[in-house]
Image 1 (tube, rainbow, N blue to C red):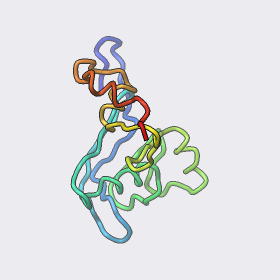
Image 2 (cartoon, rainbow, N blue to C red):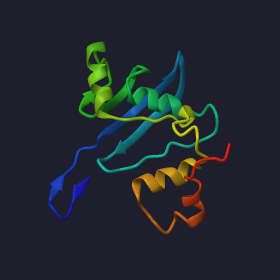
Image 3 (tube, rainbow, N blue to C red):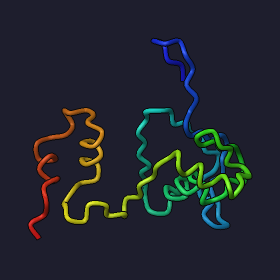
Length: 137
């Protein structure tokens, strides 16, 4: 990606080329091409069993990348050494949907994310703001 204002080239934080994403011994995604640049906020959505979690597990080197090419935060995923995995994970944060980080609050995930990022204020309505109050339970 080229930054026109500064005339600089930004490398992607996450990059996959012709990657095959595995879930155990089963291929769940073929020929994945994906780039995520600094400052991007990415949602991975889809039906159950379509490979969303497998992509994330591959990004954090929990699942091996055996075909294609993948780079995350400067680390080549193909054949990444076990000793390098903790350093990779320190450079990228992943929050899975079912973590229940705010157990005492009733929050719609997308509204919370928008509020956290403080982006696109027109999308976040007043009702979205009120769900961040503590539950009455």
